[in-house]
Image (cartoon, rainbow, N blue to C red; front, side, top):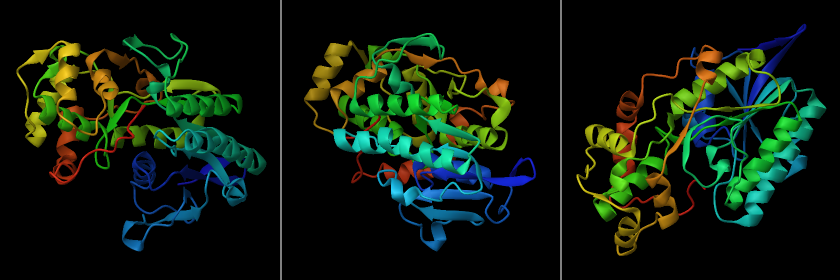
Length: 332
């Protein structure tokens, strides 16, 4: 799969090609079978072992925190899909990867004549909620964590370079080690839902987000340069509805009891675990975002949450074995 710019064929470079979203984007780009040599490239810190490497993908090594290592990675590249980020509490790591690393990548992309960069950011840049049917230009972002602040800085750099920013909400599916595992942990620790699970939540399956990225990679002119777009599935279930889906597809407990947030957090505090009170509280208020990009670029949003959770059921059942718990550094 090549893009054409004049008489020159150009490739797609996926940055973070072994990550949760980046690896899904690579699968979407090569879904029709192996691509012509050099058509799809992946920038990774370590080239995957042969069984894990996708046929037809050219793997390149580089590190966003080392600008010299990026020299030449954008050669013959028309579109960069920037799917790499650091999510955690380390202030310096957030700055060096998310902010400075994005600027270094953009500098190399400009040197190589890349046509468009598409950045995967997050709706977490908006900061404190509630967020109800929020549009992209309705609210000025007010990030509250080092991760969100530096990802917003990455957004600003990409937009200034004429790139495109996607803000997905909670992303789930095969490879997810945070969203569903965290909800599962909370169900076992508390056995109730905060505010009776009334909060409406935007989510997107990683496979559908990947198709959206692949569509933008193939036809970047579908959206104007320097614009930001939500990447949420149009259906926004309540927390209780989503937990019911988890019960149907994964056999997780579906509480009948609801608690006021303060009572919920008090009970949570008595049951030690990885998910923090702040992170749990995010599920107690509306966080849903209007996403019109699917129809604008003629990319169907997918079969829906029940079907996507069913497809990922084997992954989640293995991950949710008693010895596994989500990382303390989750989405900020």
